[in-house]
Length: 135
Image (cartoon, rainbow, N blue to C red):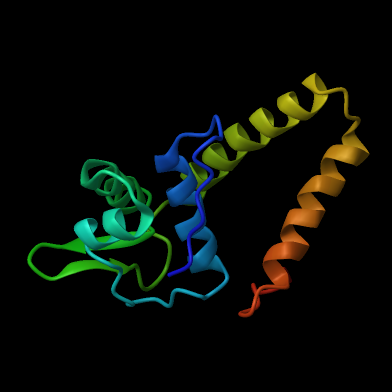
């Protein structure tokens, strides 16, 4: 599992790891049902405290990205998303508003902000395993 951390970033390490694992899942680099490293192994690999990697797995489980099976490990979730359409809409709306506010705060206009989003989507699509296209 390839995860790179920026130890000098203002973004918390926990959030960096969560985002990168989500990216590996959506690009199919991590497959549904695939077992992830243990809390201790991931902590060792990333040079983090095991408490931090435990928080990563807890957050991913809460968001439905992984399933924690006591005594067996942590696995990429299989099947349909466990959240309602309303929850998904509300969550993404909140994140979109934050993204827009930050872009405007930096002096960008809407086309520039949208171009950043498009560029990130194309980056995900160009990953080794393709993201499904919208229909």
